[in-house]
Image (cartoon, rainbow, N blue to C red):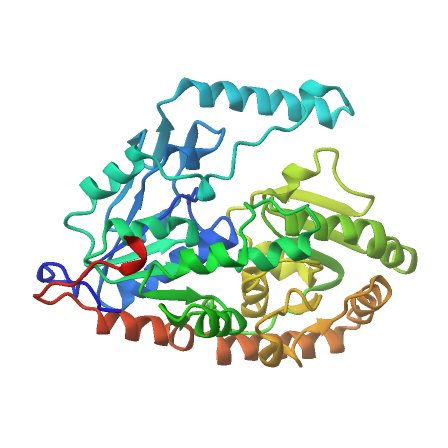
Length: 431
């Protein structure tokens, strides 16, 4: 598959790398956003200039205002169709979004007070990442990408159309997850759009390369998407200086409001937490992230929802054990890497360890059934055992998840596709 080319890069940069995304990115507020920002940071560190183009206002969902965090400054430019921006604040032009936001607030309050009538039912907007492309989306990308698309990176397979629209530029798709495998595991509870195996392969085949977050998914691309080059780029860690054993009576769960996290907490509350509290009544579970939105009435005794937390550092430092009781999901579990880098003892399921089983075999307490999961938590109340596991976790983060190790293949691909004078044929799969 030939690599397309654009005009030579301007002085001071090796080339302009255009990320095309339809996820709501305000900063490192969830796993998928953190991963995309991690890749953008790798682009900048390698001497290229990253830009972010977001062709659909639907990414705002039902919230009319978005505040961009300082992490977004990694992008040289950032444009979203259908909004206006004042400094770090983004405002939706469509007044219907404001009405939906008001309804969402009222219905959530109703659920908090135990109301069960139809008007308090949560009605989230359609999954914007997977929404069909419109002519307005395509026009926006064509018009806004002219000076910023030496290399194109589509965020999720659903943005494969960006590779076709800008087919004279080398392109890659950030896969994030194998969507067809999630559907089989989720039992109808997943929060993303369904995608068949054949459709997913067809979308991934539209780009020159596919960026996979873990080794198992990179192997899938190598075996089943021959038209695209697999690039393994795990989430990079930024380790603390020393292990943090924390308080053995304090647990921490961090997650966004997605089905895998919601189901994981439900499983924890129903099956594990009663065992833990019976044997250790003083044990507490802190829960950070927008997953709180799925539990408007809170959790069982001993649990505390903190919602979105700007700085997770203090919560990580205080926690003795970080838990990840996921029962389904794909991709690399980014919060696992974050916990390892924080030097924490971790109790996790085998789903959490998918793709990094070998690296984490001795550094994470693994349990899939409620009894063993609870037992692992209780065992780590011992200060010595907890410190040993925390030290092993930090060592794994430094050895396997350093930026240099995680980004090597990705940076090599960028260097191979630096802009040069020439032309390229259109992608066959885009015709």
